[in-house]
Length: 278
Image (cartoon, rainbow, N blue to C red; front, top):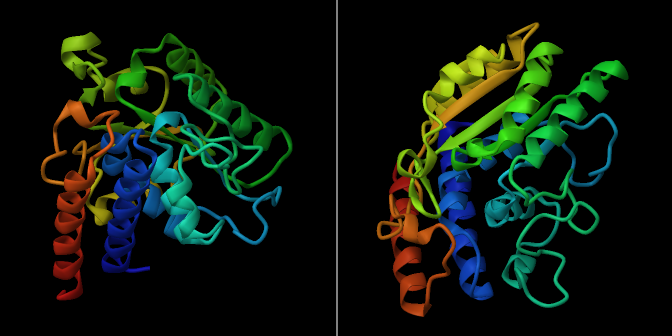
C-alpha cells in the first residue's frame, strides 16, 4: 500500500475517532489521534491478520497497552473489516461491545483486554515468549503511551523481554509528550526514553510518528533485527489533525461538543481534500 493510501485511511481513522467520542460524550481523543498513523500502518500494512478469521492461531498479535485510546484502535479495526463502521458510534453506550477500554471477549480483532497501564506490555511480552516456546513465527506488537512509562511494571516487562531476546516483539511508544496532568517532564519525566530501552537490551529506533516512510523503515528494521526486541520511539503530536486539539493536554480525555465536532471534521475534511489532490 502506498503512503498516500495510508494517509487517506489514517485521516478516516481520525474522523471516526472524533465522531465516536462525540457520540459517547466521553473518551480519549488526544492520544487516539496521535496514534492514528501507527494504527493504520499496523493494520493495513504491517500485521498478518484476517478479519474473516480473527482468532487464527498464526496471526500477528497487537496489544493496546494504553487501553484508553481504544477509539483509535476501534476505528482501524472497523475500517479493516472486523466489524461495521456504523458500530463505532455506539462507543461507550449501554449494551455496546465497544466500551471505553478494549474487551477481548467482545471485540473482534482485540487480542487482550487492557486499561490498567503497564499491564498491556507485560501481556505482549508473554505472548512473544509463548510464540518462541511454541516455535511459531507470529510477531507481537504493543503500543504504549509515554506517560505510561512512569509505571514500574513497564520496566519489569522490558527487562524480561530483553533478557529472553524476544526478537518477535515490537514495543511502540506514542511519544506525544503529554499526559492527563500536562507535560510528561513536569509530572515525572521518563526521559531519556531511548537510552532506557537500550539499557534493557532493546534495539531502539526513533521516528516521526506521522511520517509513513519512517514508520515503514522502522518496522522493516525491527523484522530484520535478530536476538533483541525492538522499541520504536514514535515522536507524535497529541490531537494530530484537529487544530484546536493539537498539543493540548486538555483533550486527553474530553469529548467535543457539537460545534467542536463540526470544527474538527472541517479540519479533517481539508486534510482529506489536500490528499486527494496529490
